Length: 171
Image (cartoon, rainbow, N blue to C red):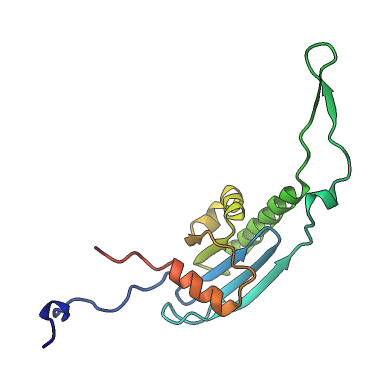
């Protein structure tokens, strides 16, 4: 005989909660040098992401970009000298890329190209985007996912973003 406690009671919803990745939601997937702008043409239960834009920049490591030794300055005291910290050219390029992405999103928001946006980005890029994103874009963000998914296939991105934006089940 079946356990009566396992039988759903009438009026209780037994379907799983829906993801925030609904039809028409745009998804920005980014790391420090690559980005994909995708649109969900499916629904929340079965998302189908289509690529709307791809961006990439060549960003070699800092040791390949900067060849000069750091500068030096005189410190207080006789014979004291201190070196300036090396410039992290790689990090600067990543920050610039995040700013460019924020500008692109702003232009598309002003043109009313999207109403809902999910950002899935590497944590450092996500932080930089938060600092630079325009309020009109920020108002359209429905979720942020701190994952680097740029090297994943599009169907895997859809699954991972849908899972990450699933509302928490009620207690």
